[in-house]
Amino acid sequence: MVYTIKNGLKKAYLAAMKTATTWDELFELGDLVEYAFETAENKSEQPAGNMVVYSFIGKGSSSGTITVPAISDEIFAKIYNTKKNSNGDVLYGMDSISGNFCLVIGVTGKATDTGLEKTEYIVLPKTTFGSPAESGQTKSADGTETLQTQQISYTSTALDNGIYKAKTSTLPASITIEMFTPVTQ
Image 1 (cartoon, rainbow, N blue to C red):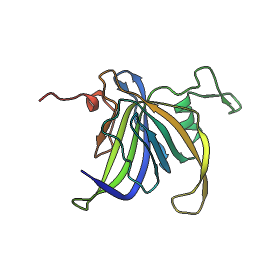
Image 2 (cartoon, helix red, strand yellow; image 1 turned 60 degrees about the vertical axis):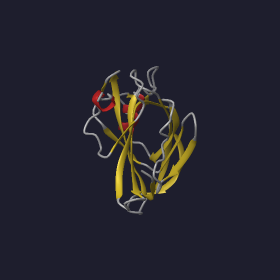
Image 3 (cartoon, rainbow, N blue to C red; image 1 turned 180 degrees about the vertical axis):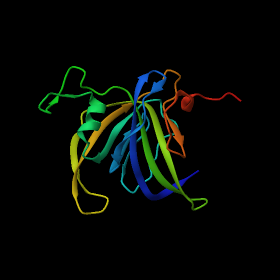
Image 4 (cartoon, rainbow, N blue to C red; image 1 turned 30 degrees about the horizontal axis):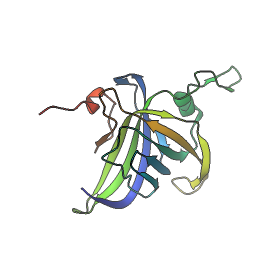
């Protein structure tokens, strides 16, 4: 099915990977301002307002960036495993790097053949993140506040079974290995 652009990027969600086949609960990273990705065969950048175009012939690995409004200290600690001391200062240790996460990108598109708007979720089950960098500024949802955005680089790779992406029409209630297990017919 071919899609044209309408409404575009929605939210990004994460779930920490506990083992090769299990994940923690899904939590919201934030509203997507921009999403860029690169696979072995192409590169694309999608500012807010655009449908994510993701290759069907990827080689199982992709890298790119996601841009969201400022990341809260709580979310930062979940992603990078930082700690706080008794004064509330952030502590960075040898394990203050991103572990593996499932990255879920919400997008809205419009089918050209039916004209119907449709929300989809791109689910990348095994993703690691680089350190965030300040990217630009955007307005809050109600337009009353200017927010500094943060851009996070990521790399997604395939699971042990070779599956590297799922696409679903609903936000998963939880991330399970069954989402990435092919059914033989």
